[in-house]
Length: 321
Image 1: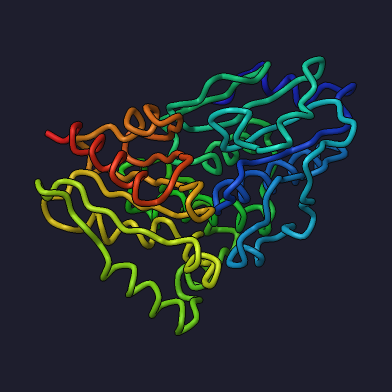
Image 2: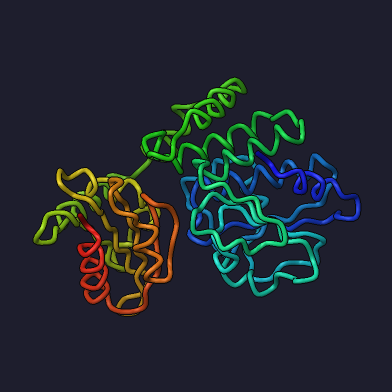
């Protein structure tokens, strides 16, 4: 349920200028919820600036309003800030340095690891994604969705639920999606743009990554890796986390699947965790300074790829039943 205090806050007439931002490593839910919130606020008569410390991946450039998002590291003067899909304020990158302590900071998120960093926090770990929550915000404010807004929210839900495959998908998620389809959302068109729009060379490279999959001695931890050189040559491989890691989780007997993406050769690695349910990978990621959900989480570690893999795989194996 949307907090009444949040509704009252958004309606305040003295809050005229809003900044809206989402986490770095942008994906469908971050962009969908961010753009939908911005659209909602504009319809309420607010001036809104969408600013991210990251570029939107190419597969999301079809999303309505995507060109209105600025890339930057400093917020312009504002009356209130809204952060969506962020477990912590630091998730917006360098922009976090320009958050003003004397202005309202609204936190809309679904991560169980959320730090309640806002002056107003609406955190619902039972929601499948932030886009599902923003849909509820439209309902609470009694604002009828437009078709572009429905496209944004549906894209966010599709991306964050793994096309409705993940355990976070609920009856409410399907109810919301069903209503969004009534606005003429092109279901297969969106799916094609996200998951069937790779070059021949990219798919061949993906095959090489899958062939390089490894398991630990117990067979309960499996992992794949994307070296920095390959990620730079085929940027989409660094963005399609779920489509890569699902191959590791699909192996019978695997409890924890890992994806290691080398950001900077020899210096920095992004780690994504996925669980079949018996291992809490939010707690696992938290041990490395990250977080997320019980069945899906992530962290970023300093160090060489080989060393990071050894350390994380060992930690994952210790948690397996």
